[in-house]
Image 1 (tube, rainbow, N blue to C red):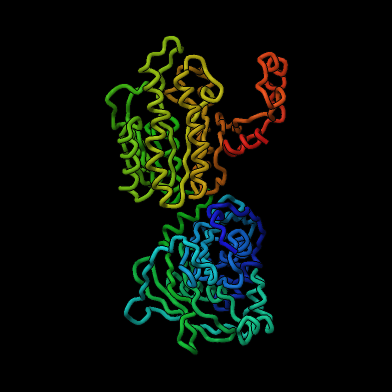
Image 2 (cartoon, one colour):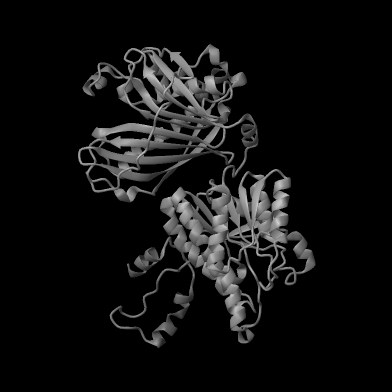
Length: 588
């Protein structure tokens, strides 16, 4: 069977499962924990072993095989990478996981292929808990002409390990471990094991993985599993139950160590190329605040010197993001030389509250300005995860009296400005395999407003840009959504009555904007109205087609007139994912 390369980027799931404290304890027993580690097996002081996260993979392995079309006879679990975003709540709850194939690499004819599957898991409280990245080695699927995997180098220090942990898995260990989800017959059925080329059932690779996880915590940050941020290894040899193992650990820098687990009887590695990373105790305490967080993420907010942009920037920083505060500091209509004062003031607020931020004063209205804004993020923080296109100006005038300068100026900031910043940010996000982009539209763009033809055209243009970027960003885990805010800012202060302005604080809109920026937001291509604590979705929809005439000759104008009530009706209208879907529906 030929590998299905179209599987790359396609979403699998979501799948929701429940767990409780007994599942945490059962897993711990399955990977060798006992009375000497009561925090893993006693509900009165329970903490989850981080490698428990690997059990979320089991629901997706079959899907990875099915969607890619790999030859099941030649598949092996080659490498495993765990990234921890928040501690696993030991009391349990509902876990929702979504997966996708991120890449398929060709090692060459007779050398096999690598299928990379990624699973993101969220707790019912909204927190992203962990990401599993599994590399499946498909021995029988190479030589299809694809790109080979990037070369990586790995070398253990040329010295004795800093720590070693000896363990003796029980001869019956797989019988307990399999109750955590991997019930493959190879680990329990002697006849199946012999048919597969083994003397008897073998240990689960992820069971040995759990032993290694316990070992590195014991020696590097004992009693504090919540500090682990990264745990990666390669599976290299099979291991029989009851065989003693030794995990060797080399600390290479603060917060990082290398490890391997060897079969004591043969001296050969069963887990190799291990990397573990952990955070400081202070960072762990900060992360433990819970909720939707943006720790380690980098956000750009344009027009952030006041109004909505200022609140967006402050709230992102409060939740851990590093923020580029962009503001030209010009007048409401975009005139003037600009000032550093608005952006600097917001940066100062963030820094005084203990956050990280830098100011940028470039204009979004030029390509050079857009590039410079994104470069500020890359130079200061190394990447871009979030972009909120918020900058805007107003030059209202009835259409008959509107000058070209008034038209061009508004489109330059709102529509062209969003392009100027989004284009370099989108490229950076593609390289990173992750991104969240928020456009800002308006009721004037969605529905029209007297005296704002320029503003309305720009704001509806942003919806069109979003509709295409949601498609082009999907493969790279870039979500693009649009907010239509109603808030008291300098752009609205003279168009709404004072009592309404008091109710429409920017703080009432910001939670939606932040949610659209979050990893937890799985949707892309939405337009959402927000104001005063009220929210609703807006959408472009198309009604079912009405055939006029016989389909062979063009209908007459009079026939259009006779059928106008049917053509004009929006009854049973629907939304479409893209233009092709709409056109195919119409042609069908």
